[in-house]
Amino acid sequence: MPDWVLTRYDDVLAALKEPTLVQTGESGPVDAEEQLRARAEVLAALPAGKVDEWREAIAPRAQELLDRLPVDRPVDLVSEFIRPWCDAIAAAVMVENLKPLSKGLADTLPSFLGNALHDLIENPSEFARLRGATDAGPRAVEELLRHAGLVHTLIRTATADVELGDIRIATGDRVTLKLDAANRDTDRFSQPYRLDLTRKSGGHVALGAGAHSCAGAVVVRLATAVVLTALAGKFAALEPGGPVEWHNGSTTAWPTNLPVRLRLL
Image (cartoon, rainbow, N blue to C red):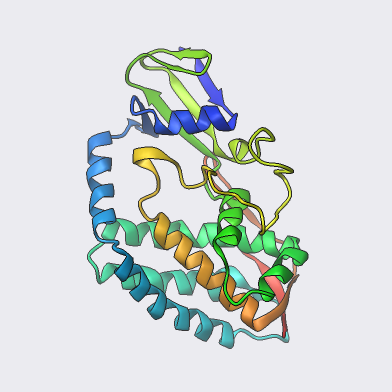
């Protein structure tokens, strides 16, 4: 059977929204109906008011952790800031009996934030943009999701014959979706390899799309905005502090450490 690899933005977006292409793990296609039920439970428990409550709870914790970081030596942002802070968010979510979301926050949110902060360390002029704002606006968050997205590849299996653009996918075919390539498609994004926190990045596929998009997307965006605002409000620069080591998996990639020197405002 052919193995389709989709890299164009339009093709990847269409595949993400196509209900006959179901998520596939190591043991084969997952139960799509069960996935939808779990997603619906999470979304039902995330009204706007609840998210606002979480913002009020987690923002001071982020500031507290940043205040503890030393400025006289390199700091590993992953172990000394990102992970303990994400653990605190996961604990807050557990109180709401959202175990699936809590696990995702504890496992995947730190990895994405590591990617995002790595991008800002590599692009000091973009971090400087944040310092001129009272908070991290939606454009900055969306651009980091586009440019530093955690999941670079998704695997789908066709449960029925389907046409996507000019290709015909047969039942049982395996389809590989390259999210990172789609988010850097020059037909969709101008100068896509450049990080630009003022870019209008809406429409990226970093969090999926359609009925199987990330159920915790609102929390990911909230957490990213809080982190960016706290960092930009305290530090003049995030300077490289040593070599960065990476986890490079078949579907995800993230820094396992992130050594920096912090320069106060």
